Image (cartoon, rainbow, N blue to C red; front, side, top):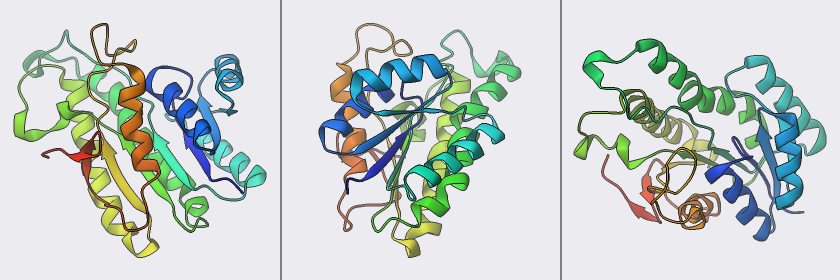
Length: 226
């Protein structure tokens, strides 16, 4: 039986390419998308299974977990890829906090909500992995001003990664944050690296051996400073 991987925000950008690469590696991929139509279309294109999923909605997440449980009985890999609001127009000193709150619902509470809902299914796997798609913009070491909604919510996501890695270590569930780099997507804009290159580091984390790292922050398989 192939491993079961669920990718949030799987109908576009990094998420779509992660789904495609995981299918190539032999995974059964569940492609989560807020739009039922878009999810079905892209899933058919990459060879995945569509799943209606809005990570900001408790009922949607619980319904998705129930569907995965019914169809597959377990989950081996959860990839939290869905993200919004690269707010280059804002500065922290004048930021619209409503924008920050909205970003947090997807970028922080979304992954948190997903982990809580899918943890029973991850615990049924013999080698579960949780991959949180983060950004080097969340590194406190080199942080400057700008993009406050995006940066602060990704910093918080990294903190969540560290806590979950420690708490789930007894369950042998590996939890890591991955930066795909500046990628040429709708969010990243033109000029970035090819999407396939950014996605490869996420797939690397999904396929770590049991002896692999947990609680880390990586790009292209190499550690990043927190």
